[in-house]
Each structure stands twice: as C-alpha cells, then as structure tokens.
Amino acid sequence: MSSLYDRHRAVVPDWVALYYRDPLEITHGEGRHVWDAEGRRYLDFFGGILTTMTAHALPEVTKAVAEQAGRIVHSSTLYLNRPMVELAERIAGLSGIPDARVFFTTSGTEANDTALLLATTYRRSNQILAMRNSYHGRSFSTVGVTGNRAWSPTGLSPLQTLYVHGAVRTRGPYAGYTDERFTEACVADLEDLIGHTRNVAALIAEPIQGVGGFTSPPDGLYAAFRRVLDRHGILWIADEVQTGWGRTGDHFWGWQAHGRAGPPDILTFAKGIGNGMSIGGVVARAEVMNCVDAHSISTFGGSPVTMAAGLANLSYLLEHDLQGNARRVGGLLLERVRAVCAGVPAVREARGRGLMIGVELTEPDTDRANPEAVAAVLEAARENGLLIGKGGGHDTSTLRIAPPLSLTVSEAEEGAALLGRALRSL
Image (cartoon, rainbow, N blue to C red; front, side, top):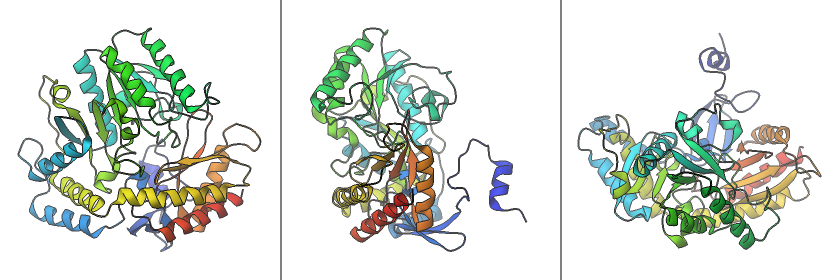
C-alpha cells in the first residue's frame, strides 16, 4: 500500500511545500502539544502557522463548534446570522477604528484581497505602496503586493506596486543608523517615492513581517509614514493576519506600536481568531467599507460554525489575559532563546516581541543567508520533539517560533532547551 506521502505527491501540486525530509502527519493535539501518526508527541512552537492561537483542542472552542453544528452549519451572508453579528460587534469595538464595519472572509489572503479592492475603489487608483520583504497572500492581487521573491510566482498583477524601505531594521542601506535616523531616512524615501507616482491608493504593511522572518521597524515608523500618507489622502492598510489578537504581548494589534498618528484606515485579520477554523476579515471605517457600489456577498465568510468558534476563542483569550501571558512568557522565552543562541556561530540575530520570535541564521563570519542551516535545525528540532517554522526573504534565513498564547513557563523553558540542542547540532 502506498504511503500517505506518495499519495500526496500523486494528487497535490508540486508547489505545495511540505516540511521535513520525512513529512509529518499530525493526527491530534492538546494544549501546546501535538501527536504524529506513530504516536510521538511534540511541543508545538508554530501552531499551524500562528493559527492555533489559544491551544489545541480547547474545550470552549470545540464545544461551541459542536453545538452550532448541531443547529445549522451554513446559511451564507444572504441571511441574518447572529454569531456573525456578535463577533463583528466585538471586533469592531476592539479594532480602534472609529465607526468600524467588519466583513468576514475565509482566509488572510482573501482579507487582504478585499482590502485592496476597497482601497483601489475608494481612491479610484490601482497604485499601491508595499514594504520590501513583505508577504500578503497567494491570490493574484496579493502576490502582486508581496515583496518577497520566494512567494511571488508571477510579475503580472492588476495593481501597480512600488516598494518602500523600512520593515527590516538590521539590513539594507540604513541598518547602521540609530532608530531615529532610520525612521527619518525611511520617511524621506517614502516622500521621494510618492513624488514619482500618480495618485496612490494605499500603503499595505505588516507591523511585524511574518513570512519575511519576523522582522520589524522601530516603533513609530508607521506613525511617521501615516503623517505623510494623510497629507496625500493615501490609505493605510495594516495587515494583522499574524500580529493580531495580542500575540506581540505589548499590544492587542501590531499597529498600536505605531499608533501615535491614529489607527489604520483598514485592518485585516485571520489565522488565530478561529484557533484553526477558517476565519479572515477586514475592518474599515464605514466611509471606506461602504464605497463598493456593486453587489457583493460571501458564501462561506461568516459561517455560523466558524463564527461560533471565533466568539468562544476570543472570549477565552480576553478572559484569560493571553495577551499578558504572551508578554510575560514571551519575554522569558526570548531571553532563553538568546541565551541558547549565544556562542552559535551561525546565529546572526534573535529578535521578536511577545510570542513571535525569529532566529536568523547566516554562514558563520559572514552576512550571507544560510537556508541549509535553517533546514538542518528544523530537522534536528523535530527529532528532539519540537516543531518550529522557517521564513526569510532577500538574503535572509530565519527560524520562526510562535507557540499558542497559553504557553506555560515550563514549556517555554523546555522549548528553548530543545532549540538550543538543535542549534548545537550544527
């Protein structure tokens, strides 16, 4: 009988990547742990790409899903939907955007796609500014604003996109500057770029770049950008697909580290809110959200079952102060990760905020990316019983560490020790 891997290769596209030389089948999970088909247990420090936000098999969420599925699974947005309205009300209130409207989608890609539709319609322009090293999804439009070659399979796009500098603090022409000088230089670059364009619709930016390797600018950079954008009427889209819901610890949304100039015009979210259920969405002030002058619905966005999951998950997150836990335990974890990285020649930098930590690896004594080392550490960590992710863009290779936000101190200590063992295997 063929292995599951052989069957996968026979029917799934070659470009759907799998981790590990011997790909892993995860069969079940509980808390911060998962088990494979052979019964081996792993400490999960990646959460299905930052998606299992609270915990695996969280009873409050599974109970809400089962109860709602027992009533009705699907109706579409053509009918009133109580769980959808209730979750939209809560998210609108938490967003920080005045007079907010919420539209639900099924993924972060679709959320960003919708945000681009709103911005280009509202501004009557297909000119978009995006950040270098960014990732915003795999649809035709979101690939067109992704500044990461590894995730951009085509140069064709319905949008005209120009890329701004500033999302990667420790590389590029301004890397040696102080934070204040770095911000000034990036703002000057933005001003200069706008001077070369026609009417710009929006800037889309991740407060912390996810796929790009958990890179981020100094706090306040996007506030400084916002003041420039406002002078030109340009919208700011904050892509919070990975940074939302308190993962950074210090803030509920990543944009709040740059909030001195106010909230974004459009905010996108996905991943963690459903704790594994398929939820994405867009928040925008009413004037922007309501600019679409054609019919539009969603067949699966706002499904009663996924909305029930989102409500239960958000309630658990807030009632148990998981943002605070991300700040406290995430700070400890970053400290421990930096300690186990010390003395490892391949480690260029350990960075992060809350439970969103990146370890960048290079060829020893150089600044060149080392994807082979990242792959080796990923394999060694798995052998030690730890699941982590990877990422990076131009000249970068990074280990990505993002456990569920309910991570305990003992699990943080254990995970850091396992990571250290994997790094030393280099």
